Image 1: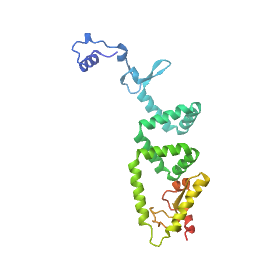
Image 2 (image 1 turned 45 degrees about the horizontal axis):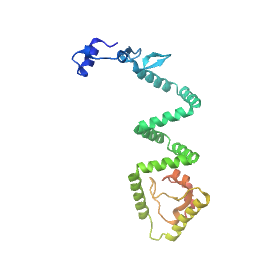
Image 3 (image 1 turned 180 degrees about the vertical axis):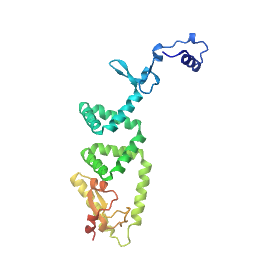
Image 4 (image 1 turned 135 degrees about the vertical axis):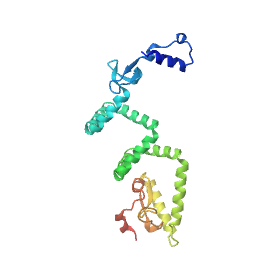
Length: 239
């Protein structure tokens, strides 16, 4: 139970001059001292074990769990795998709920994963998109709707870059033919094809030109996974 001073402070917050007139639910003020942090907290701050409050509050219990996972990474991963195997949908729902509730943390998590292993990150994302084309397409459409202005700006920037990188001697008819080949392959196979610049128009190493000799038709998956990286083995294909 709360002390007389705590009850008096509670009454003051509610604007009660006479505590005898206040109807206070007794169960709301039941408190328990945590065995770890030694703080007195309401019972709602504790998890239940066999129908009774645990000795540690939820905050201390979560802190201990984090420390254990850090000290035992292999066991923690195995524990996660077993939990996921028992109820896959529960884990998926929990992850989705966390992502919706913590969008900034989710973005930061993705950035850290990419910075730690860029090649591996791109490989995993590409593999997931190939295994889940419908979900990947739906996610891309939703992302573009959310960031319509951002993607419009990127498109205009890319178009301007392409225009500046097009030499006067480029054969525009041949370039149009390459883009038509990509459209025909897409229609014939059902697999989206795109035109890729062998030497990227913009990269940290060199800037390529937008002309027929620097173009090739590849699948969308290959093109998107390549990004603006420079692949040395492709130089031999440039006339």
